[in-house]
Length: 130
Image 1 (cartoon, helix red, strand yellow):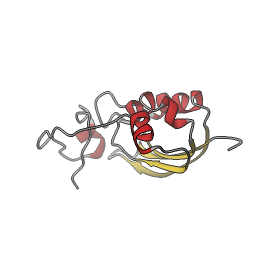
Image 2 (cartoon, helix red, strand yellow):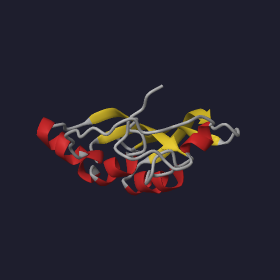
Image 3 (cartoon, rainbow, N blue to C red):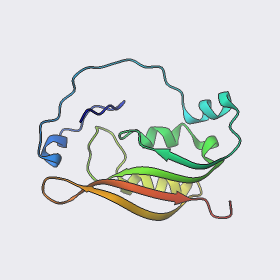
Image 4 (spheres, rainbow, N blue to C red):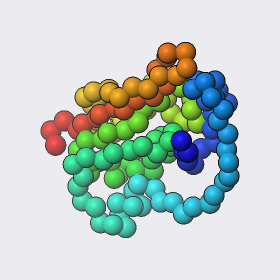
């Protein structure tokens, strides 16, 4: 099935999933940081934010430090293999979210690579006291 990301496909992605993976085309699209989006739309609070942005989670966190203070719970894709060049793997993503005041509640919906190892899943983080 087709996929898209602001990051290039990882060098080992085809090997991880046991199938050919390649970029078909490149498209320029306008983008905002999370902080810019929250400010532009005047978003004051979010109970649940679902994040599935194909490896760009690190970019979202870095560009959303202020906005993330307004988020109570995040349901976010967590990668265990470098599916996209420069993506944050779970070991990098977890401390970034903890630094923003979130705690890990659960990991679920795991997908495995061709060799049976974890490729990605979803993580649920919450902000205590909100």
